[in-house]
Length: 359
Ligand code: NAD
Ligand code: MG
Image 1 (cartoon, protein in one colour):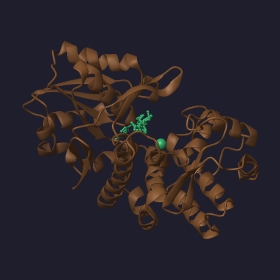
Image 2 (cartoon, helix red, strand yellow):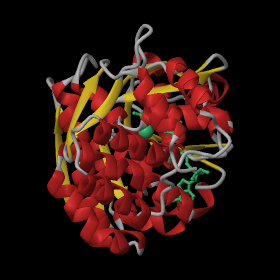
Image 3 (tube, rainbow, N blue to C red):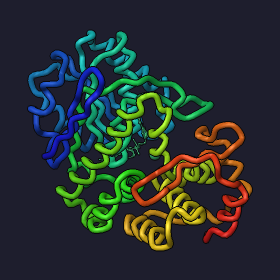
């Protein structure tokens, strides 16, 4: 097991990563506010891991809320089910919520914790790679609104994040690959050495080697935590976390949500951002080849879907919430391991890139 401590202005919390951690009571119990514990999970994850987690919590007053699966359930109606469960159990402000599942479960549980009796403790036990390297770090919690994703929410930091790498053994391969897109992103935006490490170890990661997974997850969390601490108000460097996302969101929207997983769209989007950085003279051909090979090794798509025209693509990119005013604002790469934000890209160049993109 390895541990990363996230330093916040007023306190700190641990991210423990390693195999078999679900069974380790000593990692959990120091962070429980009192005897009352509510586990929130979903119909897919509950049969896999709920009983084990409950066994780890022997001696506590443990209740559970099992929600249906899917992004479509990330709404207030299902947060209300968590609040209902807490009230029905008679839980007070010293109760602790535990999120056991992917990013959908974590975001909703965190929001329920932020709002129940004006805020109670919560612990993240993320079970998808995406949740382990992305959504469980940074303190963003919330739900979708019919008019937009993640429109309702709050910042609420967990007391601890416990990543049991063994849980990835049951994760569908496609979900694992989608999570790898965000892992690769951290290398591209911040750390060329990590990118090189990923090039050397991608096969082992996909084969779920526990020590390689531990290393990759810890490093990813460290990069995200560093960026979040540097830029809590999201004025600057936090935008680097959106590398590939403006292109990616356009793909997700064009294809209809759910047809391309978020990470898959981000993979193709990072390839596009890389190619554009090359056109601007910032990256050489060899760098482009490295990014392409790494995405391919992870099993990610590198091409935008054929049916989306360059015009439609640009239109959708303008709709993306990260685009300010009329100008496209993009996260690109000055070098491998060094992201930058620019609103100074000639749109004709983006159009040309999209037009000639191999589909
Ligand atoms: P998800 O939670 O829907 O999980 C993906 C699928 O895997 C689901 O069907 C889930 O039931 C299943 N699953 C989870 N763990 C499993 C396991 N160990 N074995 C088998 N199946 C398992 O999706 P996700 O990709 O984890 O998260 C996406 C969500 O995260 C989105 O709602 C997104 O907005 C949010 N997100 C939040 C942040 C943040 O900062 N809070 C950052 C990035 C993404
Ligand atoms: Mg993302």
